[in-house]
Length: 222
Image (cartoon, rainbow, N blue to C red; front, side, top):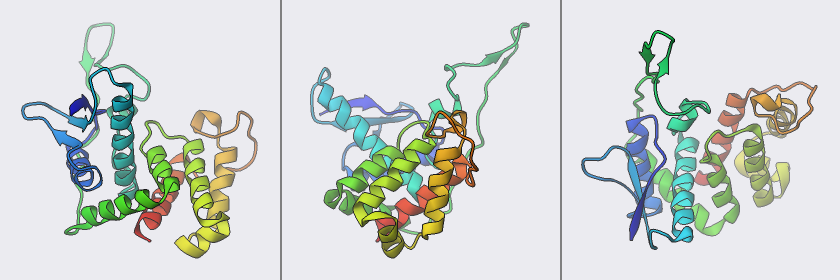
């Protein structure tokens, strides 16, 4: 086996959860390396094997998608915190420097809660390529309204449309319509999925993320 460095997460608490979820879904894949910050991804292959890299990324994103379904706001990547900028400090003309960092996060977790969700997700992706694809999308960096809309589309493929989603997952047709309306009408600079927009977007991008986290959690736990 070989290992690749995992994308950097903002929170150590998220790293711990990634290790716990990964141990259930993809045993021996996501680990800490003694004396080294961050996580490493272990997969079969050789250092120059493109397929091994693809496998490592896919497993990381799928586990991250589960973490983000468990708790909206969890699993922020360092590159997302930088919001498109490079790594390093902020400086002014006098040479003063600032390092921007978010607050440290801790979670209240019921015993076995995360492991149960991971076990359900592992069973789910074994039987459903739609769920596997949806979790992979939820683990992407810098998710947009288009990503959230596609996750909803995968759920529609799985459950035969919005009516099936309502029947199986308990999400009303009205709430699903609000997601679609928002994805179509949110400004593209704010993550909307169309170049032109002019209608009302009832949900912000963050609220769309919350809706999708709820959808995925229900889907995993069904």
